[in-house]
Amino acid sequence: MKQLLSFVRKEFHHILRDRTTMMILLLMPIIQIILFGFAITTEVKNTHVAVLAPTNDEATRRITDKINASAYFDVVAKIHNTDEILPVFRDAKAKLVIVFEDHFAEKLRRTGTAHIQLIADATDPNAATSFSFYANNIIMDYQKELMAQNTIPYQIRPEIKMLYNPQMIGAFNFVPGVLGMIMILICAMMTSISIVREKEKGTMEILLVSPMKPIYIILSKITPYFVLSCVNFATIMLLSVYVLKVPIAGSLLSLVAVSLLYIFVSLALGLLVSTLTDSQQAAMLISGMGLMIPVMLLSGMIFPIENMPVPLQWLSNLIPARWYIQAVKTIMIKGLGITAALKEIAVLSTMSLVLIGISLKKFKIRLE
Amino acid sequence: MSNTIPNNLNKVITAENLTKKFGHFTAVDNISFEVERGEIFGFLGANGAGKTTAMRMLCGLSIPTSGKGIVAGYDIGSQTEMVKKSIGYMSQKFSLYDDLKVWENIELFGGIYGMKDSEIKDKTDKLMKVLDFENERDKRVGSLPLGFKQKLAFSVSIFHSPQVVFLDEPTGGVDPITRRQFWELIYDATSRGITVFVTTHYMDEAEYCNRVSIMVDGKIEALDTPNNLKKQFNANSMDEVFQQLARKSTRKAD
Image (cartoon, rainbow over all chains, first blue to last red; front, side):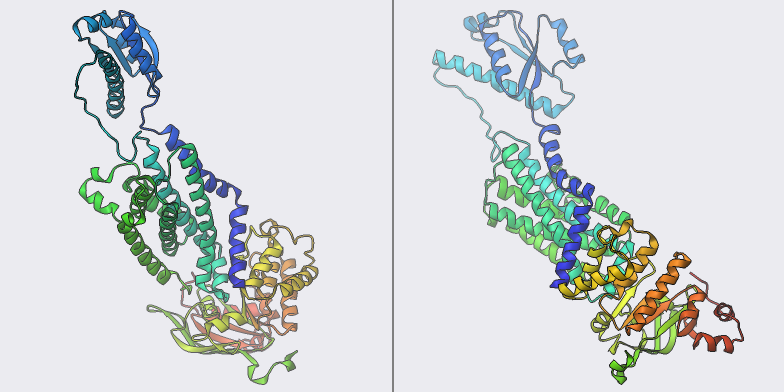
């Protein structure tokens, strides 16, 4: 036990004294959450809108105000004839131009029909679809108000309901993803690098000659990164709940339990990488190429797995992060109990057993 | 000192027909020798002669293909844990932790060898005085000059008072003055009953040893005191002895 304690203390010294690495490890989740949360977003927010209303009347003003008031849009320009529409797009002043027809309010009152044209910049088709959909909704809303005043008996109106994430907040999708990536990065990459560093520096030889049991070496290598992962887990949770307003819909306990299992899988992966390599660069490369990129691309964090070609879908089954992210979504976002994530838990447990088995077997007790 | 040790344990290292094969390559070929307690035993050989492999087997790092070895009274094949507790080891690579302070390194290895805190503290105080390291105690090892580091590494390797210490080319790259001081530390260790098993490339260092073995192509070609070897090979220095034997080598150095 004394052996283990001395060794764990040494590992903490290594990490605490390497300030740069430690800061990177602690700040990385914060930066990623902020980047994904605010910078890299597919959500429609503050889309610039130009309005062309040849007749400035009560109805056009009302609709323009409603659009401007919504969080999705900012009305940045009012233009006065159709020739100005193209320059607006060309100069990237706005992504959407709302064109009212002449005497809009008057026509609406007299004939019950008036036209609005929405012209969208569709260079980003997904965004264009979303924001024109939102704009359309706002206009429908206005129409509904009018109809209510005129007491028209019934109307048919499609209503779309977004389950689990009614506001379609992107954070609901990427918080589990970032969790999945950070954990694998810290546990797998850092653990493997720190073991390989000892091989590279020759200190591993000294440790192997000492009565220190290999399992103690492994345990003490794992402990600090385990603590670090827990800190990161807490950081991500706090940020997502208080800054991104993603609530933990399910039980925190189940979430922590699944996360611990995932940390275990990642640590086992790290051990495996360390047994396969002899230099820090190689360990970094394998963790980077072998873990980071597949996690980013194949885990469903960025690209939906259902949209992938079938062979890639099979491949994604091998990525632990895929199962973890799925489980986090089930528990944290959907708020279902741990029983709903039994499949993911079973897969992760099997993975961890297999990985630990292989890496313990391969961890070289003797330098041959 | 030697009279405090039981007679049956007077041989600290016994190697009998020790052999290590890697596939078809026989790195260590049937070597046998004994090392007495308190002795400085020089283990010489050109690069690739099999010194390091032999030493690793004796340290419990590598299992012999055949043959038997007893170190500090324990079998190297079946009692590796006990062997490891009874030996110290210093490798050719500098092997303390650069980012730990001097006293932290000592404390770490004391802890790994299961020493008590109070014992570690007392011995650290003494060691710092002996090495004249009191000003360096709180410095990180990475900031020390190489000579300091080597002396510290040796002191750490015998900090837990092992029966025998294995030194693998301990003075590589060290200036002559530090080498001298280093050998003074080795003599001091033997005066406390620690047996020293040392590999080296410096033939003047071979002269400091009580007995010397010279390995050529995995076999021990000569084993005696430096004086006897010089007589036997009709040479003026250990360097000449070594040259005569090493010339017989057919193995390419690595």
